[in-house]
Length: 254
Ligand SMILES: Nc1nc2c(ncn2[C@@H]2O[C@H](COP(=O)(O)OP(=O)(O)O)[C@@H](O)[C@H]2O)c(=O)[nH]1
Ligand SMILES: [Mg+2]
Image 1 (tube, rainbow, N blue to C red):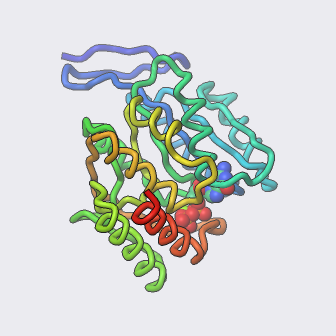
Image 2 (image 1 turned 135 degrees about the horizontal axis):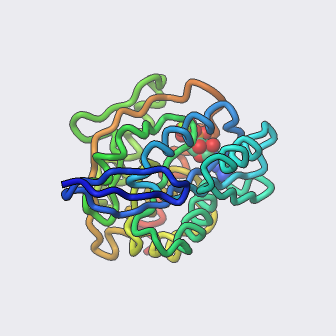
């Protein structure tokens, strides 16, 4: 049997008996993503069965990212921009975005994904099908992979993830992935227990570290990560050093 659901923007979606209506808020960090953000948001807007609201956390992008997002909101009416004014860093962008997202009383799940189309929204239905506290879009489980990265970046990413999983006994094969769905409990713990200013890789590892500490369950769904086609990466090779520092401080510091 099918039932009909009218969304806030008056669009209609049809649900079968097996569809679970578990709404999510998407948190999208942006720094100079004018060339990518429109395509991403338009694709997320086709997933209304899963995503009820989008929070874009922008750090003073100078390329017009914010005005593109605002014009999309005038069409869809379910997007907010958290404008932080200057580049305050990746980890704090996700934390601030999750804090904002957790204020939404309709949402039970919280999605984090990059805005540069490296995380393909077509994986989301299968990720939403998993019931775990944290569902990772994972490059390093069978069926997953990366495309378009130089050999050196592939080695650095694999090594960092493997070291973190092995040495910190993390329940994930891809603990540095930034494509994740959190339960409300997991999102609250991430906000409360991750350090405020972590950079990319270390922040991601810390979210899984928090999950292990609280015995949350973590599931991984294979994804193919496609290197951005447009705009510049904000990650550098210093990331591997930061990740190593994080692992060592947690091995010997606590
Ligand atoms: N708000 C915010 N977003 C950031 C910052 N650094 C990176 N991002 C965003 O985080 C995502 C991942 O960054 P990216 O440069 O693609 O990293 P890479 O995929 O590891 O090369 C992208 O959506 C960026 O726009 C930051 O300091 N603040
Ligand atoms: Mg990227």
